[in-house]
Amino acid sequence: MSTRILVVQPDEAVPAGTLGEWLEEAGAELYTRLGGADEVPATADGYDAVVCLGGGMNALADDTYPWLGDVRRLLSAAVGSGVATLGVCLGGQLLAAATGGVVNPGPHGPEAGPKLVSKKDAAWTDPLFAELPLMPDVLEFHRDAIEMLPGGATLLASTPLYPHQAFRVGKRGYGLQFHIETTRDIVDTWVARSPDVAGVAKADAFDADTLDRMHADIAETWRPFAHRFVDLAAGTLRPADDPRRGLPLA
Image 1: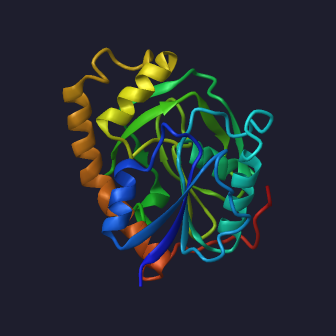
Image 2 (image 1 turned 90 degrees about the horizontal axis):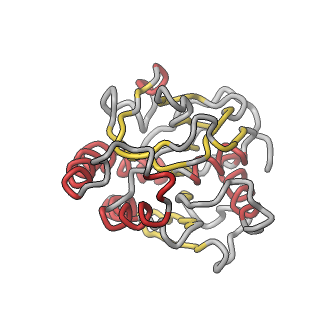
């Protein structure tokens, strides 16, 4: 029996990409809801996991994107009920905001291009992060940042510019500030759409050869991570211990 994953895609230009392929490789069946076009359910009932992807909007821009509140409520409900949950970039910010964290425009400006993030001590005993290298390759492409983690959340990875790069909330909730799902075509679309973000990266950051090398390095590290997430959702991978007794609702 396949693992059912609800995928929330807030932005047409930010699809599941290779992350979706890796999840399906591990036996998952994906059910995608596009923000603003498809209804976002209030709970994760009927699904084994929730994945929320990235987007160009602010996590709290409800005036312009009123359905964002529905996404936050879904993420809060999923984490609160122990459903495996993964938020990527905007998805990670939405997860943080939904469970009591603070998201604001990054005070140091955008962060963009191929980067390395550093694992924190807690990551070495985390079921998803333990097997990652000390400094895994990622792609950064964001204006906003997680200023404060939710109460009781566990920090799993950092960069010098923005320290809250990956975190765990509850037993099975994970937020990433960075991207692991991109292809060269997806990144090219973002660079053309958001030159202000792309402009802070190194001069050759988005050259074809650089992107190809980065994506090969990301796949080596994060493809097994995606497979472990499916195992976590399926119940064949034991979750982390959660010291907290409850989570705030969005």
